[in-house]
Image 1 (cartoon, rainbow, N blue to C red):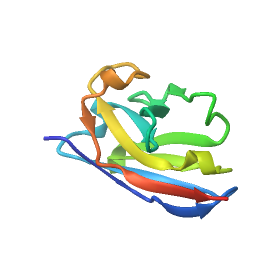
Image 2: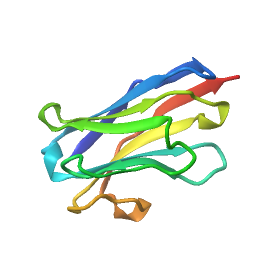
Image 3: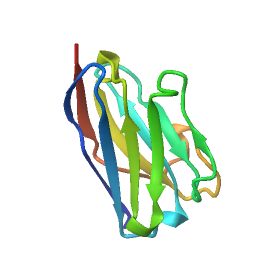
Image 4: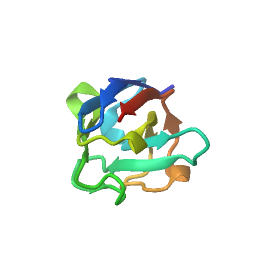
Length: 124
């Protein structure tokens, strides 16, 4: 059974940076396309970064483009989300997800495994 465990969340001031990590176990990371999502209270889950198996393709929505970077280290079975220039509206629970599909996945329904999430709070 594939398990995803996020870490690196916390409280940061606006303008600051955080790096989230997603450790994958029970499977080989290179077999999965990966994504990071966030969900704030009362809002729908939002994709904030997606990456293909080989890192050849990445995707970001306009809300985080230029501020967030998704990356992966298949040798370490870990996916990262580097967040910079953080804003209070970035406050949410951030979760990573894995997909068996061979291409980058940008829809919530395209993911097969999910982590529990880590809280990110950005103060103004």
